[in-house]
Amino acid sequence: MKKLVLTLVLSLLTLQGTLLSQTPIVQEIINQANIDSLIFFVEELSGEVQTIIGGSPYTILSRKTGQPGNDKAADYIQQKLESYGLTVYNQSFGSTGRNVYSVQLGTNYPNQKYIICAHYDDYTPSGTIAPGADDNASGTAAVLEAARIMSQYSAEYTIIYALWDEEEQGLIGSDYYATLAAAAGDSILGVVNLDMIAWDSDNNNIADLHTRSVGTSLYLKDKMVEVNTLYNLGLNIDIKNPGSTYSDHASFWFNNFGAILLIEDGTDFNAFYHTTNDLVTHFNQPYYLKMSMASFGTLATLANVYDIVPVELASFSASVIQGRIMLEWATASELNNNGFEIERSVDGNTFATIGFVEGEGTTTEPNFYSFEDLSPFTENYTIYYRLKQVDFGGNFSYSKTISVEFNMLEDFVLKQNYPNPFNPSTIVEYNLQEAGLVSLKVHDVLGKEVATLVNEEKAVGNHSVTFDAGNLPSGVYFYTIRAGNFISTKKMILAK
Image 1 (cartoon, rainbow, N blue to C red):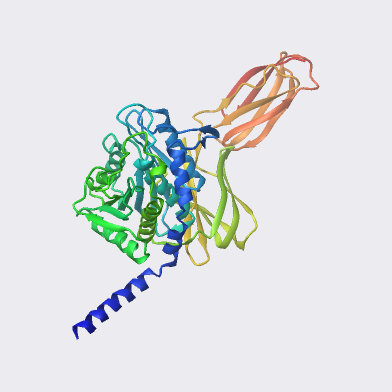
Image 2 (image 1 turned 135 degrees about the vertical axis):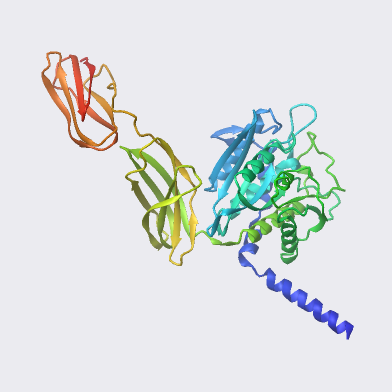
């Protein structure tokens, strides 16, 4: 009887595991983890291959604090994240510190966040060359790979892909971020920290998972263990509770946020740690792939990643035109696209809907859209915009956030023409604080009117007009603007 009961229990557990494992999107994300992509990112970050940063070739020989390669690595990270269509933020601290992170807004709970992170700086006790392939290009590359894959999906919760600086100096970058987040009351639901995840010299697949009774940490630990089991990833996870505080997850514990650390087996320590021999050639690549898959699957499960983004946004830009802001965007393809809500913000955090543009439903053809913000503000602002793409079922996803400088004038201004002297044409620019009737005329030195450039109603903002003096003789001329109570005159020289 006992044997029968035990068999039944095991059968139920097996059935439960089988049922739980049938999450196609999570399995799909795990399957997309690519060891060639991971290794190439590490090779670029550790200087084993040359990369392109800002359009120029560069070899990152060291990510040690104070070395030029450290800031170049941050540029590389920013460039990668932006290439995935993500909004990227640089967070400076101290004299040289620079965190780089990107935000993928959640469709249902945009203010509730999960973070996948790693530190990108490295260290060597002597000299300046510090390739840091395992410590911690391995973790950094895994975060970039997570962004490459999951940026093509929607998630109910916001995902932050974060790369910290100055971990080697005492968790400085992550502490700066976590402390500000706690002070601001950010809703960080969990943090998955990756630090040194590619060394396994004895090939036993042991991974240390550090957790504590802080916030959601134990829940996060359970989720990673569950993902490893359900998706047959093959890691032998060793739980460390209470976990150590030597990596960036501890910054979040200290601020009462839930966090876990995934790291290689501490009893099989990397023999090349903090040396010039910390190179990709020493990686256990199958182990590295399993560690990356475990983190991706955990994040996808936590954030409730649910489908591929139905609209492929090819471009999104903003420009200021005569006191108005023109938004333009293009799509490469659309699936079930109802349209776009246009959202605006003055702080980059709190957005309000200001309009809607209908989509093209389902199409594989490129489409171009525009929206004119006719009355942005009456003061100087950096204005932020984003698109909320909505399908016919009510599902939605956000574009990256873009910004534009909008400068309302403190006064009327008539600018000096350019070029000056000129032959035979020149441009006159003027700014209007208020809309109204504008007169702009040109006179010769005797006061005779020789041209009327403007005599009509004009909107608030910047304006320009071209004056063609091809039929006039060389000499000095004066141009005068009248707009309401504003009158101004400037001199120009026609030199044929």
